[in-house]
Image (cartoon, rainbow, N blue to C red; front, side):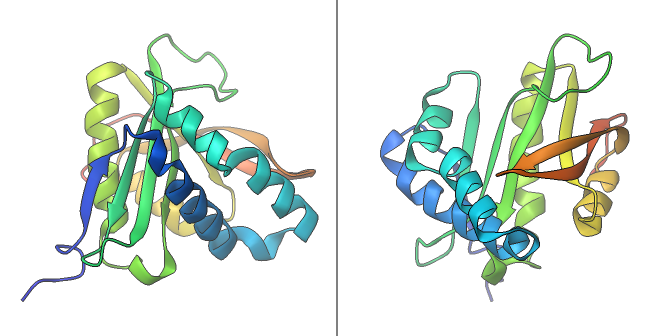
Length: 182
C-alpha cells in the first residue's frame, strides 16, 4: 500500500511557466495558515508583493535561489519550498550564509511528512553552497519552531516581519548543529 507521503513527488523548478502554479499555491497556503491573523487589506498587499506570478518568476530565474514543488498522485501542487542567500537582519551574520526562504504545505497534505521531505531537498542544496543556514519563523508558530529545532536550529534574534502594513514578531533561527528531524 502506498502512503500519502510516498505518493508525493518533489522536483526543483527551473521553468518560469510554473510561476502561476507556485503563486496560487503560495497564496493559498499562506492564507490557510496565517490569513486569519491579519486585516484583509494587509493579506492582499502581502500576497501581491510576495506571492504574485511575477514574484515567483523572479525566484525561479534567480540563479542563486532554488524552488521545489511537491505534487500528489493527481499532479496537484501540495507544497513548496524556496532557498537562497540569506538576507535576514541577523546580527553578526557570517559570509556564506544561506536561508530557507519559504516552506509551505497545503492543509490537505499536512501530517504526512511532506514538510520533512521538502526540508531534505532544501538542506541538501543549502549545505552544498553555504557554511551557515538561517530561517525566520512567526513567533507564535510553535509547531514549525519544534520542527526546526529537531533539525538543529536555535533562535538567535527577534525582528519584525511585515505582512502588508502589519509588523509581525518573528524569530530568526540559525542551524547550530546537524539534525535529522527525528
